Length: 214
Ligand SMILES: CC(C)(COP(=O)(O)OP(=O)(O)OC[C@H]1O[C@@H](n2cnc3c(N)ncnc32)[C@H](O)[C@@H]1OP(=O)(O)O)[C@@H](O)C(=O)NCCC(=O)NCCS
Image 1: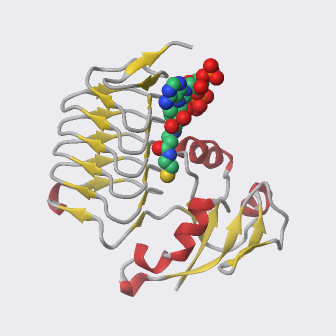
Image 2 (image 1 turned 180 degrees about the vertical axis):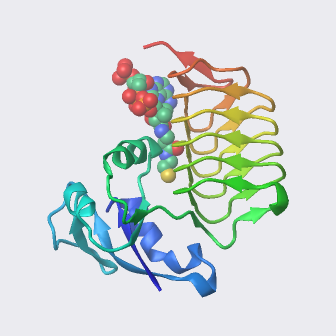
């Protein structure tokens, strides 16, 4: 059985620890050896699932093969932490909940380090890059192509033929209309429907969602 550690000892990390067995096939289960977190002390008890093993320095000097799940509520933090990890012993598996529903497995493509929690569903010709978080009951329609480090909060809906770049965040119960091209760094407020193409690195709020100029 391979060892796995969770990087990020906050709410998402503890949620993943609670349900870890469901994120791997029954013949590929992992043993959770603990948590990494730069804001905690080595040996600090995180939950009944384990203690803190250290932060970035300890991970970068880990001397045996280890899998790590980057568990941050905003995948942009995963991007920053991933950029600091420099150790060939570290691998980043996908954590895909067993009840994730893929209508067409033959056309489904996915990179590494993604977390897909329970109740999510995608249809056909889906491409997902690296270190994205689909955090519960997220739905992708047909031909959705997603880059890396994006966060999809619970219940958000991405319609067919939408493309998404990197480092975007879609709030809980938000909606994206079909065929929109979304670049990088777009943040969509919870409950907001996005009906027109957004500008990069911008925040969209309201019904329909409008750019908030700050
Ligand atoms: C909308 C959201 C993405 C904005 O996050 P952000 O890009 O970090 O922006 P900030 O929180 O710094 O807010 C920027 C500005 O927009 C304002 N703002 C944020 N949300 C707003 C809203 N719904 N309506 C009006 N103004 C809002 C803030 O007050 C702030 O204004 P200020 O600069 O005058 O103080 C974030 O607040 C959010 O809702 N995230 C998702 C939450 C979610 O789905 N949670 C589920 C957890 S499982």
